[in-house]
Image (cartoon, rainbow, N blue to C red; front, side):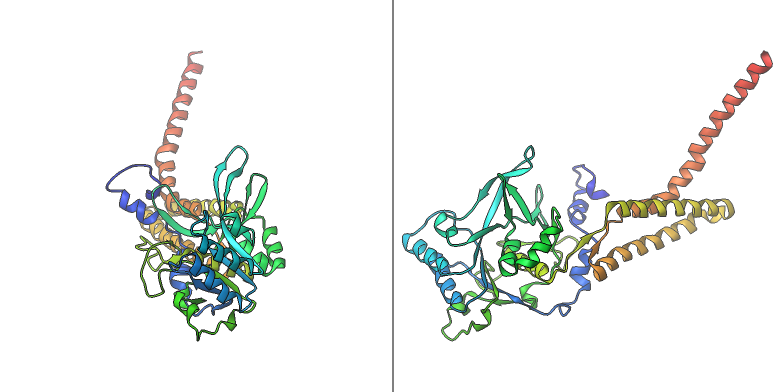
Length: 387
């Protein structure tokens, strides 16, 4: 509630910045799901491109492609020509890839037509040899970056449907799954994070490893290879191209971004291939739960007020605290066990406000109502006597 108050205050700003990006379900990803819950997804291999130039990336692609991966997805944009030698080498390397997916970007959303006006892609010399998927993630707010919890599966760009980068990669890899995925027809999908590459959730290959003559990449056969920036090397520490995610150890007041963009895409692809989606509970169910809890609390608190008036404040506070803990536990438990995301904020507000609201009704509203009707009654009776 404090984080939603539109007041610029030195007192409230720290509270707003700390809690505005917090969700109860973050606790599940950050603390409750152990790293051993999921074994490494062997369908996906991450390759770090570091700060290689285009000629270096081309050499990486040639080395990787000789091991016959099923799909190569590159989370890097090549918008304009640079050097003739590097561009030619990269274009030729891409031309040899059977299934290549490059990133695009959708921009300038038109509210009137409900579609994007601009699709930004790499230069045609590169896109000629592959397909594209937009890499936009739902992360940015007005003045700082929030956690990346979801992505849009598809967007309409000037009458053309552009799939998201993870969806496009998964479609090339296993089309039947994507058909079922798109039938969900959700405007956005929550990412059911498997983990970070540093925790062993994905196989990852560093820049230097690819160029090592003794490196054996035979395990890449028929896999999804995602190439993207993951620091100059795995030992370096950088915040570049990193995002906040629910896996951040500090789920309240996050200090540093914890996951590279290409790893976020890997988690999205892994979720799609496993078909372990996070589902939203219908809003009508959330409202019904809030109304029922509010009604039951009012009935209980009325009985307490009538029979245990002296203990009203103590008993109601204890019961409200118990219900608050139960509601928070239910939200976390449903998400942990069933991947069901339910928003019980309205129910929580009903529980916390029902006691004081009931006192306000009985001690002020009802008394004012009775007093007004008593005055009307006396006034009408006096008129009858005069008559």
